[in-house]
Length: 269
Image 1 (cartoon, rainbow, N blue to C red):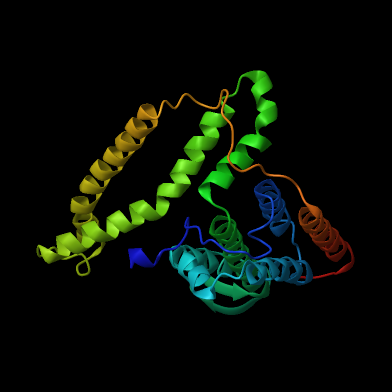
Image 2 (cartoon, rainbow, N blue to C red; image 1 turned 180 degrees about the vertical axis):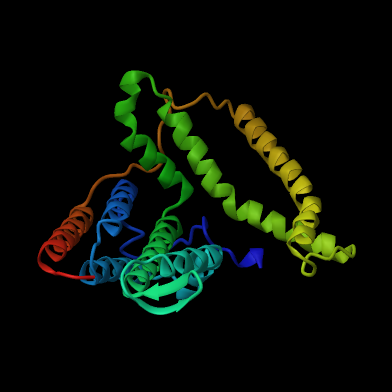
């Protein structure tokens, strides 16, 4: 169900990950995006997976919310894994017509599956432990050097934060519209693929109307509060790097070093 999707939500807490500087969390997330795709053997992949698992545990967020965030991409994971499974090189372990399974294909499928799952869990950890306001401040601070070339840093950060904030809202709105259409006799669970796509039209139209209405309401509310961008604005909460942020950076550096060593000294997939 759409209501089960938890991606984009924020869960207040007092865990170590919650108390990290939002700029540090964003930089760590970007670094993790890079190193997860620089794993060329199972040792490096296991190290990056353990690092992600450590952050999930330290966030003190219930595992069920992380599992909910995976529901959205489960079909993509299965489809991508199957594609890589049948397109490996080497001697086939099993073959039928043009389809064949090799050790290389199995390795590719495992790598792709683990990488996608780790990326979704890492992004969920970021949004679960960081409020939209903190994300906006952090993105704006990180992009501050771009003001030299007259880049609208504050406006872009605000748009990104609002878009992320309204993900769960739009998902909830979608679920309400689907329930309303089913109550009126709409059949969305039977028939072939073409019929199911046509059945989504009565959902998409009111969803777009609702999204534009919400966007108009937000714009009106900001205008009524005399919002004029980032010029001269102050912040209620000031963010500062602390010792725990330095330790988090050190942990990331150790993982990067470990991945490099694994790629160099560990042979084979």
